[in-house]
Amino acid sequence: MTDRRDEAVQALLDKQEIYEVLARYLRAVDRGDVEGVAACYLPGATEDHGGVFEGTAEDYVSSISRVLTHPKSRTMHCMTNVLVELAGDSAQAESYVTTFSRVKTPEGLGDSFVGARIVDRLERRDGRWGIAHRALVWEWNHDAPVSETWIFGMLVPDPAVLVRGGKHPDDLVYDGPNGAAR
Image (cartoon, rainbow, N blue to C red; front, side):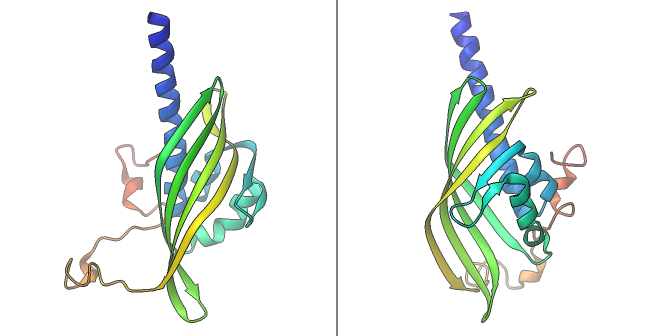
């Protein structure tokens, strides 16, 4: 019984580490932390971004780095329904992701909401889990004009008083207990 319990505990630890890789990836995207995004992939990893990009993860990260780090870039990626299936030092994770992006359009600023699923093949190499291949599948999209009134003006009369998120390394999360949230 001890062996089964040890295996179950190890499976939980592996799944938690995998979940944290996926969560760190999304946080790094939203904070414009290009090195943090790249660190979630394993060397030689590949990316298939649902018809928008297909190639090496290194090339993918390079192709999005300018957008991620733009000081006015506003995104939020929310991950749910994470299912991890382990197979030794390999795993598959399916995650549902809902995203918000503030984008510059020919008519001015716009807000885009997207629902997608991400299917990752992860591997444990040199004692750490990382993404070996990522495939994104688009599910739905809703675009809308910008309307930032903070709950129709009910949250605060002056939105200038709100503490807002920032880009790497100036966001609150990077002031963690060790001076950096990594």
